[in-house]
Image (tube, rainbow, N blue to C red; front, top):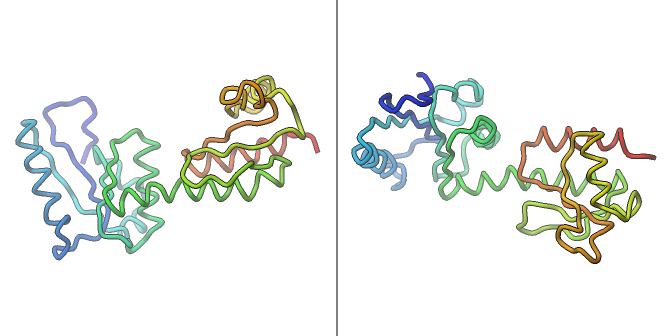
Length: 204
């Protein structure tokens, strides 16, 4: 299969990530819904079930021939890490992604893991999260050990490490000087890279 790119006449291949189960109503309905969408747009839509156990063996490169990824209901998946890898693949390659029911929850799990890593590792660098976020995709943290001017500090961090942080003064012009925001809705490898760069750059 080939990724359809800008060709508006070729079929749209959709990876349905999960274990197909005819006893699940949604699993019977999804191909029917895609069939109706196909007729509505006048273009062939071809869904393919991708079992997470098979995906774990084949790797996410096996998804390169698909135009989009749909992480379907019916969790827990046979291989949670493979489902998360498919979600990450869609985001990092710019493919359309849809997560319904358990599929959406797994999209959140990826970001929750990032949050846990930051909450654990930032204090080791002298950066103290103010509160543990419950639903937000960012961590508001105290960097007063290094600066009371978050805007200037964020510029310096960006120039010297390539890491983009949001200065606290963007959210609190009066008291935001010693605070910054860390965004958690990125890939885990980006979180790990940022922590490594900060650890090497920050004064001990």
